[in-house]
Image (cartoon, rainbow, N blue to C red; front, side):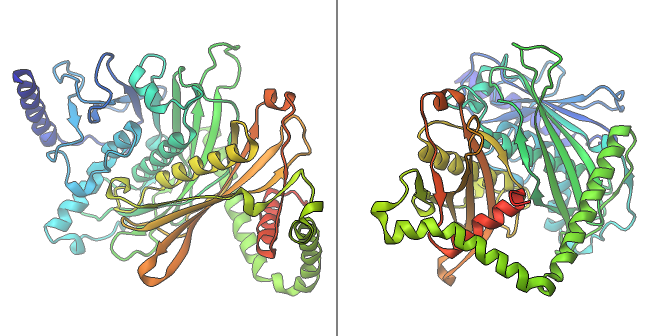
Length: 502
């Protein structure tokens, strides 16, 4: 008991010291987050984090570390930064607590950027938020100024490894998607910060996530690194690329360490008016940064051109409607056999409606982000878990994740919302016998029973396959056929987006 009081007293004294410590400038600094936890400690204790920064910008090839531990127990006397207890109120106001649902990574990332939000909360508490002007002078920043990296010490940290391990000794992809979203948000905040405490911070929200393709399995017993930076900015949009890398210890060191690449798009809103707000400019420096900037700029122009082309779609609408009707009839032909002549239906096929799964939840305060809304990474995490279960039940063997397709965040999800996730196997691609593909759709609905209203907040598409050993043992995957015109249209839209009819 005496030891407990002594530890608590030391932690409180340290927290007050940290609270008085001035924040260091981060406009031109890289940040590296190293996850570690001492051995022999209780993994069920609350999360705590240790942060250290350096006063001068490091050389271009170095990262200044912000070390993160996954539990209480670190001593503050080693000069490397003290433990910050996530359960105390001396560090930041209650409204900025992300809750204990989140992983050590997301908590550490929010801790790294929370000072920006603290001044917004302090101004609001003082009744000065409406007097804070928006940022008027845009800054020009480099990708290096927002570059952030996280190192997962899986090889040496038993507790951290256990937090991310799935039943097959691989990294939990859903949890990793959550971390990627948190990292992208931190990068966006760093780029948009003007280092001026008199202006009100921008509200940054995830607008979309481009296709993420898993290039190789991610092991849970080998160190993992995720790193990203801003690659392109529009007037009020920010594109961020993140790479997940892991060196395979059992193969040639010259093999490509990149396991996954993710591209996020954030949009900036004025925190008072909710209208779109301009963001700081970007000046790429290296050849790779210039190449990424040019690629994202060309992609942005293509997206705008397609949007304009869709406005004139009615000019050739008759011919397109005729072609679409033929495709719909072709898809629905087998479904009608299931409905009208079930005894004669193809036993290697299954109706789409028979692959469905669903779960529901009430969004809790512990799942919110720093803006008070439900964390986008949480939505991706839950959608992936349901998609994996859907593919597992459909195939009959453990599925292997391949990619998540483009995701648009259509509606915000708030604390207290009744959220429903509905999934189904949309279609299968069986042309390649060595790697059959299973496309799973997950739709998130925000339901308001009091208003008798339900809106789609997100639609996710995940692609899975099965391991080669299961195929060698005679595993067969069924075709999925629609039974309604609405299901057939969803399949055609997805296939068109994948370019399967080009």
